[in-house]
Length: 526
Image 1 (cartoon, rainbow, N blue to C red):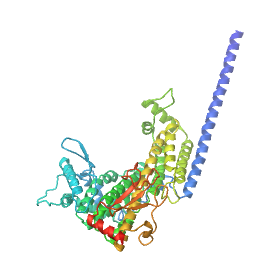
Image 2 (image 1 turned 90 degrees about the vertical axis):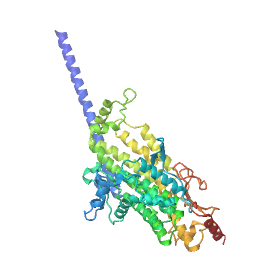
Image 3 (image 1 turned 30 degrees about the vertical axis):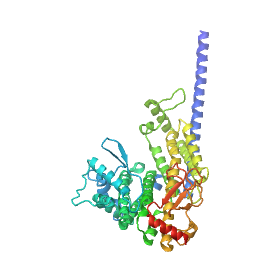
Image 4 (image 1 turned 180 degrees about the horizontal axis):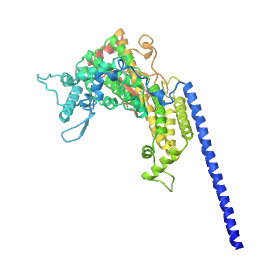
């Protein structure tokens, strides 16, 4: 009996100790969680204070653009309803020429032609004419235009004639983007999930814009060429001006790349005057790196709002379900468990994590870009790649790291693409300035310094490391304008302009006739 009492007393003693230990453990864990919560709140407050002092976006309210009165808001105009909003009758959705590919008779994919418009040579226009005919033939959404009259022998004129079916849509779009206050159709009430129905349709305009510019350049139809080129620049500019999110920036960047690349391939075949060159020079100017940094900051504000409101079933598919070597895999149960634990953390813990991540990212962006955000500094792309790789390899399971790592992984590529757009933009500005100089003096300038300050306020800097853009006269009478490209080395203008090539090059001259080449040589020798 005594032994039994002793055993009971001993059990009660150990049970009491165990309860005390559990209580202490729970208290310690609670204090730890509270510490994380309070520290996270302070980190978020400090981050917000510094960002607001710098005028940077923090919350969703900082990102959503101000509402525009209906009578000034182009999104409320009838043409935008017809072009974008009406799901059953949206005119842009019915454009035949919306894909950069078509299929031949054997079912093989054929991409849009790549070449240059050369004066007196219809080869490039003929290739595009065949592409347009093929696209019309395989499309079931619209009928090919009925060309009642005899077709012109000039491929450029026939291409213009076939593209005339899109003139009403294109003219309406041109009218819209020229309005003083262009606000794209957005559902503001949706918050971070707000819809932007125009993005997909805008991307589908690329082949049509290319075909129109090529047709006009081949026919030396200067008025139509300048009109469509201006519309393309204004379209990308208005997309950038809304700057709602990273998606807006990427779509605007894609449109501007198409406009600049097509301009490079066609502009030498067009007859220019001083007024048109000056106008396009202004429109071609952009701040791609600055716009990217700003859009990344806005994307952080959108991302924070989304992650703080996200549900388990929304977060789980974005995770890897990795709990270490003993428990890892792609099972939905593991991902749901991980999502549940992540979202169960107190708000301060989550805010602190976002503050640390966003603060480090912003610091890195500013550390490796110039103060005016015109160029990236040596080692910048490598530092961005290293951060993305580190994030991917050292993601913590009780955090948003798996989600944030996706953005970190693509950020270096976005910077590289923004720099290429900036290089093309700078080259276009210089090309226009050189053209204006040539109209006045009858010859090419010996150096870019000759353009300052009459034709350009200052020489645009190379977005790679900040040196001057390069200018190289060719023996053929043309010239090259180029950036040293992502390898950071001046390769003498070698490279086709891709993001992984040696130099980013704007080549001028293929559109010059042999006679004009000779004239340029003679003027240069005087």
